[in-house]
Image 1 (cartoon, rainbow, N blue to C red):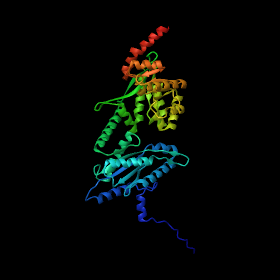
Image 2: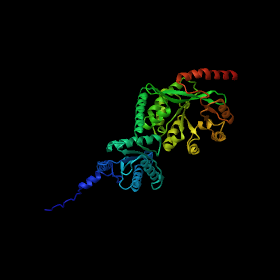
Image 3: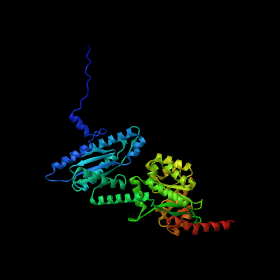
Length: 455
C-alpha cells in the first residue's frame, strides 16, 4: 500500500496577520489602522502633560483623469512613487500612511502650531510636484493639504481626521496645491457651504433657478444678434446668491450636470419665442467637458424642447478645455457635427490660447473684459485687442468684445473692426419676460425700419 506524501501548506503567523491588517498592500505604507494606533500611542504618552501634535491629509489633484487616461497600472505606479517620496522625507518619529485611494495621511508628533504645519505642507508639495516616470512618458501632479492640530481640532483620532478632511476640502475649493490648517472659522465657513449646497440642491429639484438673458449686438448697427443665458438664484431665505458662488459649488459637489441641464432647458424654451435668426449662447463647465455623455445630453434637451441646434452657441473657457483635452475634443466635435457653434470665452487670459486655437475648432472668440475695460486708457490693451482681431480675421473667426460699459468703448471697438459686443452699455441681464419686451421695443422696430429702407 502506497502512502501519499503529505502536501505542505503555508501557515500565517499571528504577527504576519497583524502586519497585513496594518499595511496598505499596494504601497507598503501603513493604513488607517496604523494611523489610529499611532494617534492613540501619542495621546497615551502625553496624557499627564498634554502637548499638541498634528495630523494631516494630502490629496493628489486631478489624479483620476490621469488614471483614466494612462490606465490603472500607471496610476498604481504613481501612487507607489508618491509613497516612496513621502516615506523618504517625513521627519523622525512621524508616520505616513495611505489614507484612501489617492489620499495619504501623516501623524506629526513634533509639529505644534499652524506655521509649522504650513511649512511642512509646502515642503511636501514641492516633493510631490516633481515629474513621475512612467517609462515612455513623464507626468506631473500637484497636491492639496488639510491639517488638524490636537487638541484644538479634536481630542481623538476620528475628530482629528474629520477636522483634517474639513481643512482639505477647503483647500480643494480654493484650487490646486493649496494648504489649510483647521480652525473654528474654517469649520463655520464649511458649514455654511454645506447649508448652501443643500439649499441649491432643493432649488434645482423645485426648478427655482432662473435664467436671465444679456443681449449680444452687432457693433456696426447696434442691432441684437443673440443673447447669452446667465443663471440667477434668489432664495427665499438666503436672498440673492451670486452665480460666482453657486455655480462653482455645483461643480465641486458634483451636480453641475443637473443644474446645467435645467438651465439649458429653460433657456431654450424661452428662446423659442425669439426671432429665429437670433442665437442663444450658453456656458459649459469644465466638469461637463470631462463627461463623455455631455453631447448626447445637450442634443437630447434641444430635441425635447424643439430648439434648432444651429441656433445654439456653447461658450467654453480654455481652462475647461485643458482639464481633459481628448474628451473635450470629442464632445465639441459631436456638437459641431449637429450644428452647434462653439465660442472660446475669456480669450487672452489663459496660458496657451494660441495652442488651443490650433488644436480645437472654434467658431467665435470672446475678448475678455479685462482688455475691453482699458481700451481707452491703456495702449497695451488696445494693441492686444488689435492683434486678436487681426488673428481672428485670418482664421475666419467671429469676435465678441465682452464687458462694454459705455459708448466710447463701443465706438473704439467698432473702429478697430470688432464685429459684436456685449455689456451693460447695450443691456443688463433680464428675465425671459423682460427680454421679450426688450425685443419688441428694440429689435422688431429696428428690423422693420431696415426692411422699409431697403424695400
